[in-house]
Every structure is written in structure tokens, then in C-alpha cells.
Length: 415
Image (cartoon, rainbow, N blue to C red; front, side, top):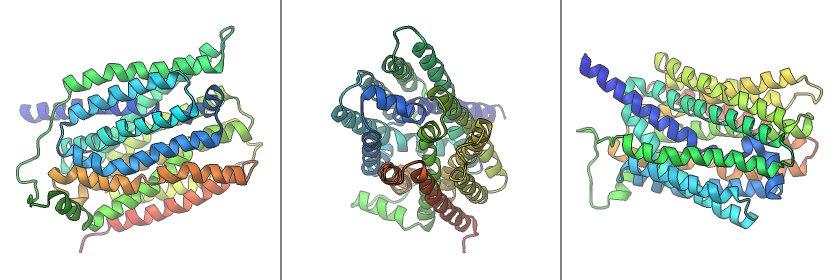
């Protein structure tokens, strides 16, 4: 009993370390979630150019997901995570210099390598191996919810710092944004050595392997893609991620078409971030109690309906109503994020090719990150006065319902 408690405590402490690392590494890449118009002003770029940077990030993610999984099966995850944190932080220092648009493309591409190739699959695999079969929902729910808590804490500090610097005499948006960037960089530089020193290297469980043949990589690929559950899991993630990705545009949408200030919009989007720990963790525990796939199906359907309501908000809507709708969408989409990787536990993938499976699922599941920035930019430019945003939200709502159907198929008993 003492050993069991000690092992559980060790697992949760390791999970906590991964959560802080994951929560600290991504906010810089997605800084536009809370500061989109401020970034456009400080870097003197257009909205389309910023979306090209995001698309560059998505492209690098797409081409590195499978190599990332292969790497996670062969290199110490502790070393991969520590390297990723340090590299992302150092690139953030360059980012804070407010470089040219061409340099921004290079930075976003390098960020894609640092967080896609050497970080993503390694952290997912670590969490999957830490959790027992009947704990996959709660561990992944805690991972995403915990990441959200870390991001919300950092974002709250960032918004407060931004507002404080902006209110100083002779201050500017550029100076305020620089301080925000340095805040995130400092956290990354601190977390890198802590991750290297404190994180364990988990070994593959005996008997949880597949036969290694001469054409190793090809056989591993075939072993993964032959599983129907892998494809359904990928569809759930792709559709759920599109619902979540829509929330990145809320900042500009609310500021441009509802007359809110940058600080007010930042406050609303930060409040949305606080829904992540609540939605992710609650969904994870409910998923373990009922069924991750069934709860995921319900959440995808509800999140799709909630996002569709964003298209019908009148410009005269009260700020409290906008806040309530944004928080509801945040709660549901974060619940989806907290559960969709828990479906991996039901795919019965051996640990020594689990990284590769994660890479393949990620390549399909996060494909929207490649095309959504350009798709949304095109809609917004072609249909002004908020109509482009409304069409965008309605289209992604339909995809969310498709994901709900995929989750329903996953939940059905295997025959």
C-alpha cells in the first residue's frame, strides 16, 4: 500500500512537471490570442501576414509530427523537453526585438521545430505511459486543464503587466508588448534546467512491444495505420481542434466589431483561459467514470452549437452576454481538448510505437492549423463587417458535429 501510494505520488509529481513545461512553452507561439491587434501595431504587419506566420507554424508542425513520434520512441523525453523549452525561450528573445516580417517567418518556423519535433509527441507519450489504463481520461484531462491553469496564470500576469506599462508616461504598445514577451521567455529559461534535472525517463513495460523486423520504420507505420481506432481518434482531434482554434479569433472579432478596447478584450480572453482547468479536468474525471468516447461525443456536439451562437450575437449585445458566450465556448472546447487524447488508451497501441502513433494522429488531427489561418483570413477579407467571422464560425461548427459522430463510432463496442 505504501509502495502504491508512493508510486502514485511520483506519477502525479511527474505529471505536474510536464504540465508546467507544456503550459509555459506554447503561449509565445499563440500570443495573438490575447494581443493580436497589439502585435500588428508593434511589428507593423498586416493581419494576413500574421496569419501567414501562424500558417508557417502549422506547416512545420505537419511535417514534423511523424518524425517527432519516431524521435520520442528513441530519445530521452527528458532531454527533448528540456531542449525544447530552452530553444523556444531563446527564439523569444529574438522575437522581442520586433524583427522584420521575413525574420518573423523564420522565428515561427524555428518555433515549429522546437515545439513540434522535439516536444509534442514526447510529452503526450510520457503522460500516456504515466497513466494506468483506467486513468487515461483524468491524466489527459489534468494535463490539458493544468496547462490551461498555467497559461491562465501567465496570461493574467501578462495582461496586468501590459496594462501597467501602457499606462506609464512616454510608453507605447511596442514597449508594453516587449515586457510581456520577456515575461514568457524568463519562465521558459527557468523551466528548461528544472525539467532536465527532475523529470524521469520512463521505460517501456515488459511485454508491451511489437516485433522488430528488418524494415523497422515501415513495419511500425503499418502497425499503426491498420488500426481503425487510430483514424477515428485523429478525426475527433481534427474536428475538436477546429472548434478550439476558432477561439483564437475572438480577440480581433470582439475588438473590431463590438467596440471593446484592447484591455477589455484581453480581460475576456484571459477569463476564457480560466475555463481550461475547469473544463479539461472535469471532463477527464467524468470520462473515466462514464466513458471518454461518450463524453467526448456529447462535448463536441455542445461545443459546436455554442460556437454557432457566436455568429448570431448582435453588435449591440451587452458585454456580460459576450463574456458568458465566450466562457461557455471556452468551457466546452477545453473539455473536448481534455478528453480527445484519452481515446488513445482504447487504441491498444504498444508503448514502443506509441510515439509514432501519436505523431501520425497529430499529423492528421492538427492539419487544420495549416489551413485555418489562411482560410479565416480569406473569409474576413472577402466578407467584411464581421460577416466573414460568422461564416467561419458556422463552418467550423459543422466540422465539430462530424467529430461528434466519430466519437460516437469510437464509443460503440468493438465487434
